[in-house]
Length: 267
Ligand SMILES: [Zn+2]
Image 1 (cartoon, protein in one colour):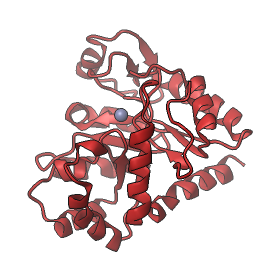
Image 2 (spheres, rainbow, N blue to C red):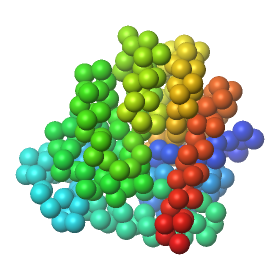
Image 3 (tube, rainbow, N blue to C red):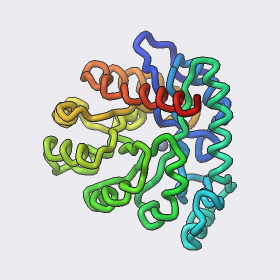
Image 4 (cartoon, helix red, strand yellow):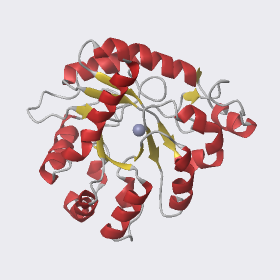
């Protein structure tokens, strides 16, 4: 069942995956099993949260997380829900799987992915829940909502990353140096997404951006955006080769540090 063939130059991390908690085909247990087969040491589950885009919603409005539940948000996220799964359940399932995976040498992170176009309206309601995650991926950030993004994420205490290489496609007219300094100012990490990398006309063209980002000791992550078992070996290998050859991998060391920090925290 392994869609990612053995590769000598395989990544050690996958920081972007979807399970049956949102629109993925694999259960949490299957995703962990697959990560072990892939030889990963660091896996993040990043199911879609609070969105009407995913076919299955993850409703975060359990009482602890969001006492000030927002009716409009409830309408929006419950509108076409196939199933509502409490955020608390997501977190507790991830904690269970994390303890088990740790005994097998795999560090599992409880992440999440939000669509900023939906989230910006209800951000204050979500903050309490989001801060229970290890980190957050945000999609659909662009020149039009950058300022708002910058001000809203100040209330998050967890690392935040820009998903899907949005950084280059969303700011086509911003010169690399300016973009890199804006990213550094906000303090977010930048995701290299194996599933999206083919969309970049030429990764060579993005190299100027990466060069500027690296000058500022930018943090990066690498993820597959895995939703199902369609073969993605080629994309993963090509994406990781780009990461290694461009010298971006040291920018991912913070992820190992994040796992160590958590070990100390939980004893
Ligand atoms: Zn995703």
